[in-house]
Length: 72
Image (cartoon, rainbow, N blue to C red):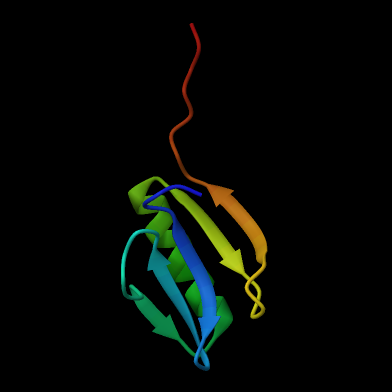
């Protein structure tokens, strides 16, 4: 996980998205599906990784939106 990656996690009864390295959540939602979709959109726009955590804190899924390097 690198600085700038987006993490979707559960805390204090809400699902939240936070950019790694940031102090506060970018957004919150009572519904997991809404938070995951918002987190994915943030990660895609920033071209970084998106990590979705279980309520217990384990990484459940991971997607990478970084541009692929082409070899010549």
